[in-house]
Image (tube, rainbow, N blue to C red; front, side, top):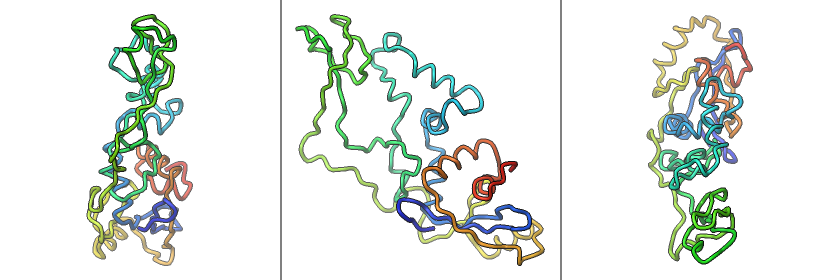
Length: 238
């Protein structure tokens, strides 16, 4: 649906008696956000979901890279790029970056570092990792330098028409995040498949999705097929 203060609104049809979400009614913004999940690098997902709270071992791989000293990494490897990979904003379309990570379209100056000692031969080396060791004198390379962008560099913008799905269309989002175009027939068919007999028990619930809800949706998508019910009706057993 629409956007409010950097958030996306989603209208849910809820079965009050069964305490479950039948489906959500969404516009392009929400569907683009949802489909963008599949383009997230694994490192970004681990960081967003917190490595200490993840089920399985991916969090431990993340922690291993995080704690690995630069001496053991290949010279051309920047740990920050591995742990916090930047994602292109083109697939987000006009959708707010609800998950809060940086895209690779940012025009902020890159921070560079040189040797803290600054002997003659040391000036030939720079790095993006302040924990790197100078190949010339073995001192840490933590003296800050700033890469200044050249003139005429415009801020990257996301053009209209980008993203995944077309606008001016209403989409039906299932409790398990399956998406299909909205239609009267599909709505009636869905109510029949859920065996909803008491139509008076149906109600609409409009929710706003910000960063907290976005991360919660990403996390819930790994552990349940009742994502919308889990998030917005507080059904922790979903």
